[in-house]
Image (spheres, rainbow, N blue to C red):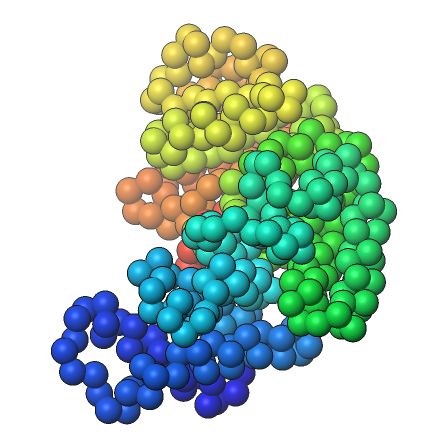
Length: 396
């Protein structure tokens, strides 16, 4: 990104914060910003399309561009920007697209959800549907794309991209008002074609994945985050090795766990898997989300977090249980009370795996894992997940 534009973005951000805090006197060096809002906006839009043409644009530059454009979609600037002829719907669309191109689909979703007026242009509606993922889409094109994703029709997804690409080339002869949204849609579909759920999952077009994909799509998850894509491409699903994954908060650990549990338990139907969570509150939360969704997909699942001595309800029904979400203390009690279940466990996922290094609880978790390794259990894989893993070498 050009140095002069970076300076403009920094000055605009500084001025906006000064106005928000009602600073009475603006520094002279920022005075030009008050009279040239439209010039900066035009420069940002030009930079957006320059970055689209430049395949080497860094994610950080996309994020910076998205944040700068998002300032023009802010709710408290309606009158100010209307006076200089800036369309806030358009600004929100451009900002959201920048985030999406940089690999920040969640930021794209949040930004476009701030749009306050309905869209009339079919191409813009398609962009909105692809970025905001509403339950009821505005565009027949994206509704068809969503259906193709659920059904595993990868050819239909590729055909949609080819169709829009052809329309975008034809629109060059019509004018910018038609070409701009079509060009954005073409780029969005190109990325979506490479990152959607079916494109990343091994043998993604197979009916094997349909229950999982249907569940994810119903929640607005149409594609994987970059961190999830990296883990899957490195063999998280297919390789038998133990993995340690460092994924920041909001990077999609729960959805990745759901994908791994779905694949593992369907590929090995006679086995069971355990998701170890450090706190009872987290286990209770997952009971209403992950566990419920696994049950809906036909994988009998349950939670156990009562304490060191499992209750009768936690012991009963384990013979039919495929996935168990449990705290370390409760799992330790279950292993002692039901050896048959212990022998069926072939996968253990440790959430917040860095707790192995924690003085108060780490020893207990380490002893539990060591116990599972030396006893007659069927554990073949351990997966450690955490937002921060400072002790990665020790865990490995």
